[in-house]
Figure 1: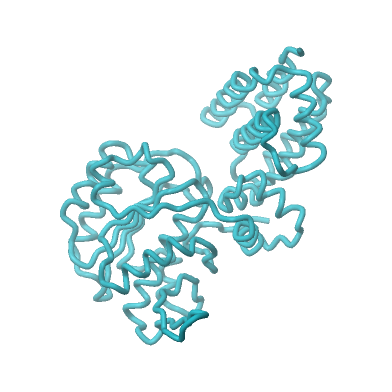
Figure 2: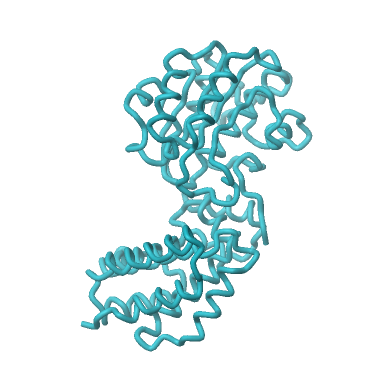
Length: 366
């Protein structure tokens, strides 16, 4: 099942209660900083937060009567809150989802919907478009908001261009910057932002996000997606949308049968990664092999609490008992390099899978 999982289309905002309260308090106390750095692990909802915040502020200015009043359990005092959910009857919300709102500027990579976690650089000329955007009067007479997704995809020229805007922010502007890696953020940019640190979601929130966005009611699938993605709903939905569970089962089967791997698995695996349901193609193997090897290493240290399946547990224990756990980094590097070359130069995928299997079969037994 193919889904449009771009954060701008998320209907219900789930989790990150503390981060939301901090942002709302700043908004309603008229202390909203002009630039916010949303920082935290990949795929946990930072970009969803940015779009939800932008929608709520841009629609709040136009619909004062939609102010939400909540009541605490201990005292009947009204608490102001922004509407972080997507209202399909709200014209402003729909225009933001359709990328046609004049007061929201989004700077992101090309084809981000198809490859949300790729590392392609955002061209500096796209960042410079912010200068023109912020030089104009607000089309709706209120806020002008920019989302940069993400700082991790800017080179030094893009970062320096952004820094100039942050140094002289125009009035009534809000810039939401997203990053999954502190090392990618210049200190000069960080110093001009209010940092909002996001933590991984709890299991209940993660599973609810996966269930809400995938329409998958199978509890076993939800648990597997949660475990494989390490609690990142964004990654879980990417896997769900790209045959991830099926491909992972085939990888488990390969490791179960070392060194006598059934060669028929090649065509089966090729069929899965070439399916129209899989927009990632062979790239998804990198993520899933990394996941399997990482979990194998953690299992060797007794750090695995949840099993994806009995076959995964058996495959990893077989590896631990019969092969050198110290060989994992070299194995991963060889496979990672081969798959990246295949993807970058559009090489034969079947040969890449054969090479993958040959690399595994070459492992020396204890």
